[in-house]
Length: 146
Image (cartoon, rainbow, N blue to C red; front, side):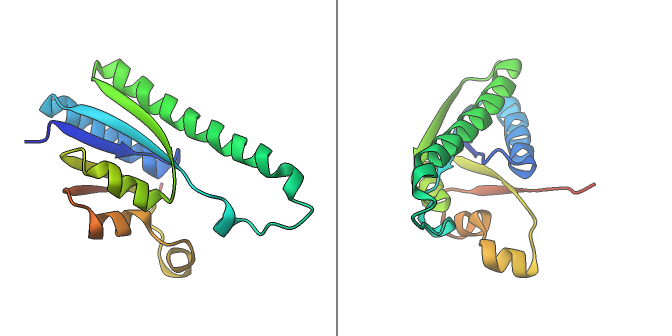
């Protein structure tokens, strides 16, 4: 059935919920997991002016550190469960990176933020894009708000 599960994360609570559910599934199926963090280009998210250029490299490095921290949290969870895993920090648009990596796995488990209305329109939805275009099955795990 599912022997290899892709677990993308952006470090958010919603993504980590997806990771936890994916790990439970992997444990039940005795599957290996691959964690993925997509380091997105800053261009579309950041208006670059002369005043921001000195801080650009520092910002990129901070984002890289966030990605590595998210992957570290995920791998620690897999280690606690005794699951085989690999972890990758790849550069590119999140949905595109996830879709490319999905080709190497049997299933993608992805946490959703549950945004609606204007937030979803302005921010887009990586989960929606991946679910629509994935070459492999996608399990979407909704973010439960307290």
